[in-house]
Length: 399
Image (cartoon, rainbow, N blue to C red; front, side, top):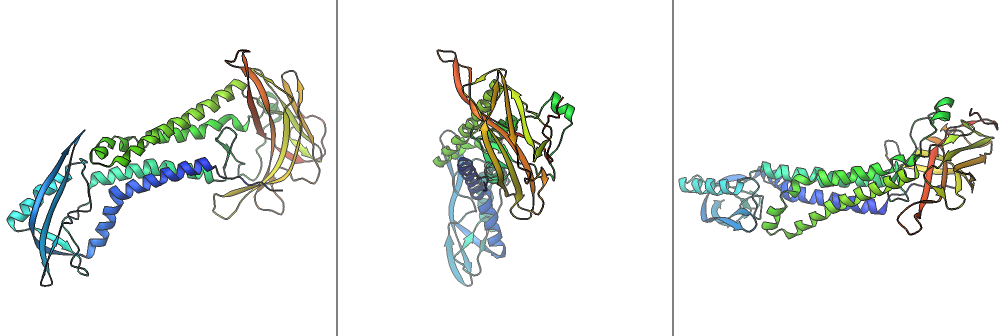
């Protein structure tokens, strides 16, 4: 029986939209100009004369500029006209490019020094200015790193095998790729226990939400200029701060519920567990109680990379057993008898990758809330990585 970690559909959707927005804005503000300069690199410079020339000024919420005009030129003994001014179109006020272009071209025309760039393979194609605007490069770079970077991060987290969708709509850290499961000392296991995997479930959503809010902020400051220039589709950018707050709200909610229940470190018994023997342990609830008998689950998982150098890692279920956990007051105990033929933690003999063992407990707990009876039910789901060795030990190794 195998079970692959599947990417989160919500994460893939958000990541894809963010990446498209980042790439799209970066292309239209910077990439298209860089591509245009490369395409026109072999074009020839020829004399030209202005037919019309004007500086367009729009005053709405802010003042934006553009240049309109046309010119004539000769190439190969024939006369041509064109209105292609630069690699940029539309009104904006990012720097003073349009004002400087207007004054420079006008002065060059008056001196008789005006030159245009003509495509020798198609003389009807010409362009008046091949300047690359630094401000637009920065603007596009911010969107590429902000929205595109966040989108790539979300896609990576959603698709990467190191993460899987959790019940709280977040991601769960997958098995470490080290050759063996780390084993702490018996005294440390007795005093501190093994922390649950869920203790950091909120962190991924928190970092995603924070990145969505912070990284695109410089680009969002230019939103009024884009709207003033008639680019009303830019209003869609306002969705991204809302999405960032949504992720932060999820992070806060998951963290709050985790703290309401408590840390629940697992005290393994025996330590380490044994194939051909017993694997188990217990944890205590101090701030809540189970609404019914919880279900315990022990899993042996084979994890390995699908391809060399790939971040895509599979998690195949080698063996799993479920049974009710034991309740003794606030203490929850789990105990499994494990077949001897199962592999121990660490390298999997005869296979690529490694083995890890996971002990989990699921159910519903009653916790203080705002309902009339003062209590509410919330889902409980905790899991722990437990070191396992080969051997028939049955008695507890815990003090």
